[in-house]
Image (tube, rainbow, N blue to C red):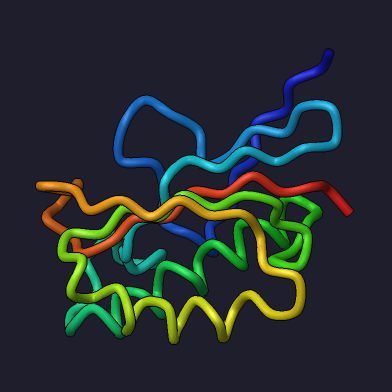
Length: 127
């Protein structure tokens, strides 16, 4: 079993001792992606919609650079600061995942890194 570290400049860099993603046996396992601007590392300004757009755009880029795609995602885990944002996040989620949706867990949490409003991790099949 060979493990390959995945890294891209099109998604936020790791803010701790971890990899952006790992590939093992044709599967891509991502770390949590938070709404940071990949160029500056700063938290994206704005409401949950702006932060969600950044998170899903970054995840899409990370998966593409790992040799996968949003269509190949089989499982998502979404951590959100406020469950009242669930409907808004779902609207943006549905723009990035279409057709056969991946399995998903969504959990409200007390706090996320850099006090962001959401974090997303996924498991995907490599193309």
